[in-house]
Amino acid sequence: MDKVDAIVIGAGAVGLAVAAALSRILPNVLVVDKNSGFGEETSSRNSEVIHAGIYYPQGSLKAQCCVEGKQALYTYCEERNIPHKKIGKLIVAQTPEEEAYLSTALEKARTNGVDDVRRVTASALSTMEPFLCATAGLLSPSTGIVDVHSYMQSLLAEIEVNKGQFIGQTYMESATVSDSGFKVAFNSQGEKVRLACRYLINSAGLKSEAVARNIDGMPECHISTVHWCRGHYFSYAGRSPFSRLIYPVPEASGAGLGIHATLDLGGQLKFGPDTEYIDHLAYGVSPRLAPKFTEAIKRYFPALDEARLMPAYSGIRPKLQGPGEAVQDFEIQAEDDHGVKGLVNLFGIESPGITASLAIAERVVQRLYLGEDSSV
Ligand SMILES: Cc1cc2nc3c(=O)[nH]c(=O)nc-3n(C[C@H](O)[C@H](O)[C@H](O)COP(=O)(O)OP(=O)(O)OC[C@H]3O[C@@H](n4cnc5c(N)ncnc54)[C@H](O)[C@@H]3O)c2cc1C
Image (cartoon, rainbow, N blue to C red):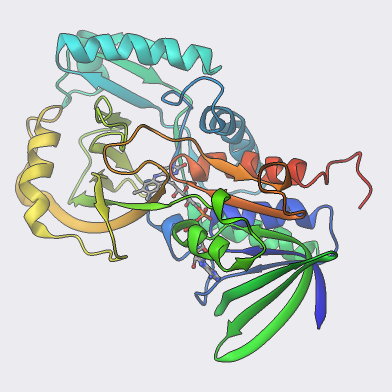
């Protein structure tokens, strides 16, 4: 059986960032995906926003990895000419209750180390964004947008320069734990392939729970339940009325950030995502959602022209927070948690997973004791 140092299951932005970090230390790293290309699932179905780190509970992995990851991602993009833009974001309120939320959010941002967020008055808002209707807002100058496909391409190039490899159309079926590591069975285009490795990283996103269940030796009591929560987007035809990202206050459930307005690097405006828990994976966007979107958007953009709103795409969040449950953190689970040497499970890597990807990758390296001081 062929042996490699590390296998990463899942070639989304996070799996690729982990594989790139491992490839800087280990000579023989493989990242596999069941799809033919990299990043065909959640990593290509999101808002492509580089988040600042405002919303997440102090000390949580989401807060830490978002703030560290944001800085690392801006640097990575600059060094590698990955298209990105720090266009800034406004979080806006329409009621006294929502204004009170802005104060909480400002406080939270500061405790998370995001110290450039500032209050904006209604009159300043109308100068900055004439089509916006709001009584108060927060400006986050360090929020930006990134071309996630180019980012993933760049991570893959780094992996390959470091002699690592991406293999598509390769479905991880099962793995067994042994003293020297893992034996992993794949179905690669109908062919059964078995590989041995010392380190195994489960970065399978929506299927991370299923992948963990297929590792013989992974204690069941440590396998987290992953809920699927779809978010739909509508694009807005024609010229964008906004030059920054516009967010309402988040949903009270904490499941989503509210139907917001984001721009891509080509200037295309889109609205979304909403939240809908689902029990099978499907990506359709029903035109029947238009009235719900219209109502939410008109709160901050009364001049919305409904005829310009078109169903666009959807993405599915791998959430540890089930319907009606409290907000959950990312889970980076290693030997110290589950007792299996060399195995890291990444559960619940929803938003801000793109922003946090380089920081998550650093933590995976640390949790495997592969830092600079450890002998490999
Ligand atoms: C609607 C929405 C909006 C978002 N907006 C933002 C945002 O603006 N900013 C931000 O920072 N984050 C955002 N996120 C979060 C971000 O998109 C995710 O956190 C990130 O893409 C997760 O990357 P990943 O590599 O963990 O997972 P994925 O991209 O899902 O990759 C997992 C991969 O594993 C593969 N796989 C699964 N099972 C197997 C198997 N058995 N064998 C082989 N391969 C397998 C899959 O094919 C897949 O390619 C958003 C998410 C959603 C859903």
